[in-house]
Amino acid sequence: MNVNQYDLAVIGAGPGGYVAAIRAAQLGLRVACIEKESRLGGTCLRVGCIPSKALLESSEKFVQAKEHFGDHGIHTENLRIDISAMMTRKNQIIETLANGISGLFKKNKIDHAHGTASFLAPNQLQISSSAGTRTISASRILIATGSVPIELPGLPFDGKRVISSDQAIALEKVPQQLVVIGAGAIGLELGSVWSRLGSQVTVLELFPAVLPGADEEMARQMERTLRDQGMKFHFGITAKGLKEEKKRLQVVFGPSDGPADKDSSTPADVVLVAVGRRAAAQGLNLEKVGVNCDSRGRIVVNHKWETSVPNIYAIGDVIAGPMLAHKAEEEGIAAVELICGKAGHVNYDTIPYVVYTAPELAWVGKTEAQLKEKSISYRTGKFRFAANARALCMDEAQGLVKILADARTDRVLGVHIFGPQASSLIAEAGVAMEFGASSEDIARTCHAHPSLPETLKEAALAVDGRTINS
Image (cartoon, rainbow, N blue to C red; front, top):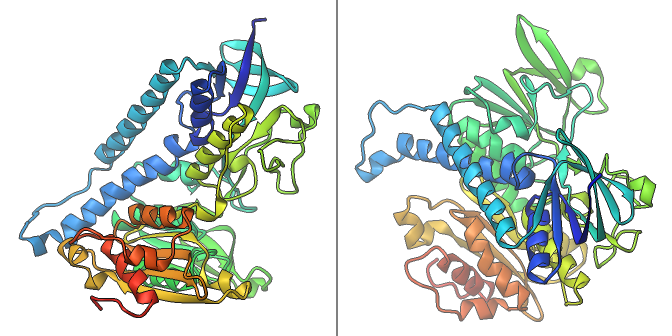
């Protein structure tokens, strides 16, 4: 049995794991990174963030060509979709980025171990693969195993008719009827992809609105927009199972505590279950070494991302908090820097959230509901993209920017953007909040004209009732 000694072993090569491994190597540690999949990059790169964005981009270009190019004097006769080519492009992007991570590992002298890791002792891991089993030792071990899709009772994944997001980014043809269970970011994004390409998409959601946790005003705008784009919604219900009716698959749904005679059904060729994800902590043999988990199976850590075992750490989706790739990245860097005696830190109040529909929705900081719940007095500034020159030139003038500022200090407490390139625009708000900016600070900052970021300046001016262009 081959035994190797490392300063740090990272389990998982997703956004949190591979970034942590690179930062540790930069700080002089001898690092091994264990990944069970053949490609580096984790769920985000292989079957999550990246492939879904590739398909969102492709499908949005199709809609633009079909519905809007004529307004620009560009005529596209005989427009058609080639799903195979679309998937090939997506796969090439994945391959390019995965190879890039491999190159970074070589550059930083990180040992990549392919296989499934499990604990033999607090500082010892067994790695199993088709090539056999080996053991490595490490002074410290960082768990970054991510998460997996949640399966619903009565709707087990079969990979064909009932699928998770993993399969939704690899369908070989456009389903005529797609039922999406869950109106969170994953459900709305993937529902949008296939709706744009021709599916009739029906979304079933337990809560009374899309995107629970988002600003209510923005969520309402999102729902109206998606309805206008052809998607259907049923709220306050739960999916109860499947039935065959006239050789057609039907999804049965109704109030979760209601009688069966109140249930309804909707036809489906494919059912996408997108009700969330759970921590992927199983199979690590955590109980053997005494690593504690909470009631939801997430690894418990302190403010230094240390588990109940002093030399074992955990970050990302496998611990509590938002399941976001960039959150995992920040935690990975901070944990490693603390291990090395530096001042690692993550400000959870300035982590941005993004939903990559069209228009996009992005936010950072508090919602109005959260501020009201804490009895925090605030002022609001809004500015619509319809009054922004750049948005009009882009033919993407739907949506608005909303800034929430403390009524006494004017400090920015939250920024919410529903509109074009919101995922990029939100970065300015994040930087402003990280440095404790006021709405006046944003309003006094010169923004290029014409540009989309001018909407943030105008919304900041609106906090004080002095917006210029509306």
